[in-house]
Length: 115
Image 1 (cartoon, rainbow, N blue to C red):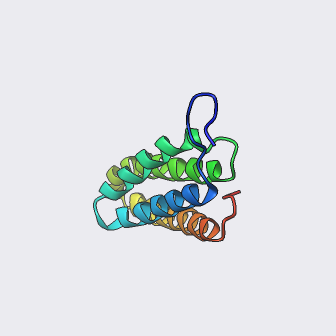
Image 2 (image 1 turned 45 degrees about the vertical axis):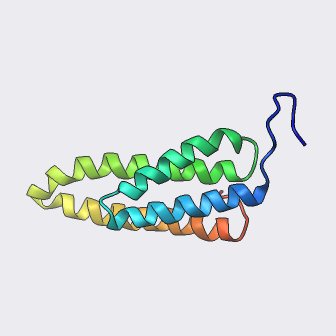
């Protein structure tokens, strides 16, 4: 049924599928020079407004956070690789990235909010 603006409310299954796709793209970004990650974050930004107030909002917020934190830390860590500490920072970042992304994907597959 349409609301006052004429928009049709989306189902939880629609948000669930979008969240799962965004997590898969975020993971695929590790192997595609982060191009798939850019698509994932754009998808999350587009869907976050529609998902406001639903459990899926937490997933889209998580995807956006993981993308931007990963990008900023990577840009800081790469020059630090010349003094070796950057490799350590990138290793910790990879573990954090995988933890947040896989946890989100598993929770999305189960139909639960990220938090």
